Image (cartoon, rainbow, N blue to C red):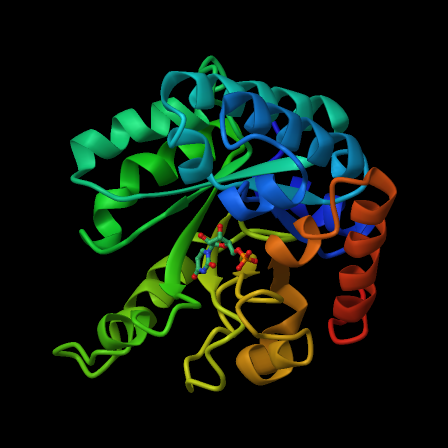
Length: 278
Ligand SMILES: O=c1ccn([C@@H]2O[C@H](COP(=O)(O)O)[C@@H](O)[C@H]2O)c(=O)[nH]1
């Protein structure tokens, strides 16, 4: 079985370094002429799959926008995941799960066990109950070729107070997360399966990302104000591991399928201009 890191590396080589989010904000549903209900959500998601599922390396549904419609929204999320996988893109479910280890086992089974209806290629996870509490998720990911992206330095301004706080050993909280994920990726040949989330908005924070060995998901581009050129400042010598992520910047071009494709192509060109070829 191939690891997530290997599959991600191949997807990036074949399709380019880009992740596009499916974030059906109420304002976007309205702008697309869709109702703010489960039917609007379904049509929005199907349109994104049709436009991007066969061309973007990674698609990242934001679970919150599906969960807000209850069981119908979750059923649409399951269907969207299946459609994306059939279309050939890797699916990164943005759920930011984090809990005590025994509960993490259940979250891992929900998203990373191939027999689950919600099975995806990778998930986002929050380390603020301790990176060690995420171990059941790391273990199931490794067993089934899945991936986990752990929050390290998030794109929102409020994150800094916690993430850049200095721990007893002198490292920041974020650096302890970075170091733990680097350890998990030891020995990976192409790209490790354990990634970090590092916002493109944060500027040069002085954190050392050079030994991570896994993908660095960079949200915050477009609607949150960062541009592709900011990736240089944030990631420095680690640019080759960056997976830029855009949601509203691309989605606001819809509902026209050709316009969505053109928007994704445009941001990919911007990113390729900054990132080393892979
Ligand atoms: O630090 C983080 C972690 C996750 N996100 C998520 O990414 C998208 C960003 O959407 P845009 O429309 O491109 O701003 C969204 O789902 C966030 O929950 C993040 O922004 N920052």
